[in-house]
Image 1 (cartoon, rainbow, N blue to C red):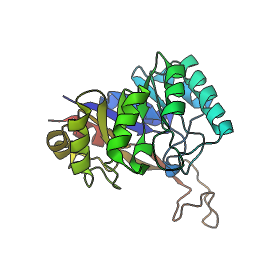
Image 2: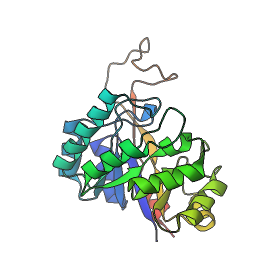
Image 3: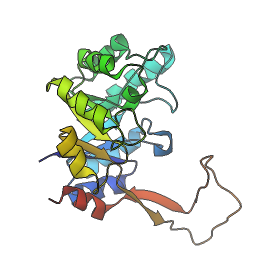
Image 4: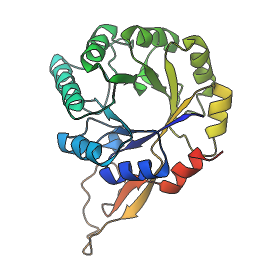
Length: 243
């Protein structure tokens, strides 16, 4: 058995993930930026509509993971909001300018988050030395590390993921994420030895809009279709959970 975490950005996706049998959801906003902190209203509404374990992204902006003092203050406030609204976990990560885990500030956030557990997210994949970074993440008190093995997709980083699992010696759970799907699930579980998988399992649904214009788009991530929305794929999640 393994734990399946679905990355979502809507209430509808949360409900689909629960109905399909996922173990946990990671709630974000703006998945086109890799996920940032969702709004108070989004966290509350998702929590009110699912019984699954809820993990909330704590990331004040897109881009890198080296944060100013003001951004660090925002992260503290967002952790308190997630705790107030009944989240079970938060997901975060801070790096130093030279590409190492910021153990000092990350540890402060993890202490503030208690009794919620903390996942150190893919900021890890942007570190200079993954083996030193593993030890540093463990020092912070994080319970889980999400990684693609410092490659664009987890299956490409499977050698490093396997090494991280071995070196962790169960001091922290290693969760593989990025490009995870039913076709590579078995290899990640069996070869790497991970016990947790993370994916968005997304498909698209058409807009409810009858009137549509093709002249405009509000996203800079082109090509874009303003009349399609990403949503969790029930069938893909079921396939992930099938033997």
